[in-house]
Amino acid sequence: MAEMVTSDSGGSKKHKKVRGKKLSTRVDFTPMVDLGFLLITFFMLTTTMSKPKTMEINMPVKDKTADSTKIKESTAMTIILSENNRIYYYFGITDPQIEVTNFKPTGIRKILLEKNDPQLIKINSLKKRFNNKEIDEEEFKKELVAIKSDKDALMVLIKADDKAKYRNLVDILDEMNITNIGKYAIVDLAPQELELIQNLKGGSPS
Amino acid sequence: MPAVKVPRKSTVIDMTAMTDVAFLLLTFFMLTTKFKPDEPVNINTPSSISQILLPEKDIIQILIAADDKVYFEIDGKFTRIALLERMGEKYQISFTDAEKNAFALIGTIGLPISQLKQYLDLSPDARKKVVPSGIPCDSTRNELGDWVHQARLSNPAFRVAIKGDSEASYTVVKQVIATLQDKKVNKFNFITSQEQPVGD
Image (cartoon, rainbow over all chains, first blue to last red; front, side, top):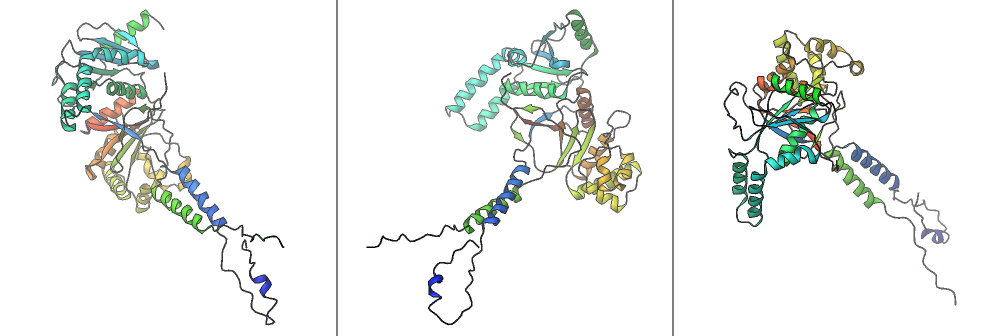
């Protein structure tokens, strides 16, 4: 179809004998290329290239959670997730002084970074040693776990009331990763804490 | 002196090589592609900075939609048939072979088991019109727990992954987690999407 047969045009007149016209065996591939690329486009658009990411959660075994881990008063911090992406938090256990913050980097992250400062300094110096190749990867990981689970490290208790969204939970777990906090747990909300939040809401409506 | 004749060149390009390339790419995409599974609800997962990839197989997915309905999803044709038989035994519902085959092909389970038989008898077109009511997972009728329990009995290597919508309420998530803990599943994954760099 697209092939121009130029070489035969002059020659055929010389011969008297009529010969069967030599047909070109060439096939035009252009439509086939079109088809190929059309299908490629289809598959490229339907394929799911990015696999979903996950975060792993380990919950304690239910039967013996009651008081298997004692939390030190000085290291405990409680975070309560509530409606409209609000976060209530307090330090210690016996004398809760509840304060409010939010999910912005200047909010909860700043507080967590400040509280976790001693561990962060240790982690940074460890990273520096690892980057200078003073320790190998295995040792680095071991030390990192040791620092994160240090008995004086911040222990965060994550609680949420009924109006919190699933996103809040994922976000706060994310903050734990960002601020290198190794010790945290998802715990049920105690009734007296709910009361404290209600009081706070009643006191300062926002 | 006649002008030098420039030999006329054919304008035709040989397309064969291009065809080869096109079909090579096509083959690649056909082999690597994995179609998006047909989910009854659209779920917007919250984003996180986590970089861990979800394992490819042996996954039980628990979907929590924005309207707090819970769905259950599991891979593998034969696992699904075996699972349905076990669940049928437990709830004293007998399924026919046709129903079992239909169950092997449907994507996500979003109905209480009492309505499942009826649902499987419908034609595939009619099934799409059924509005799923979600799997009950409260303390009085915890069918979700049974699904997870029976699935793990048939293959203990199964990992549980929770895929929740960002707007799903925490109460339901708490219920699902409590259910899993009840069934001694203390290690599970939250499916999230890649964090978008947003400066807020």
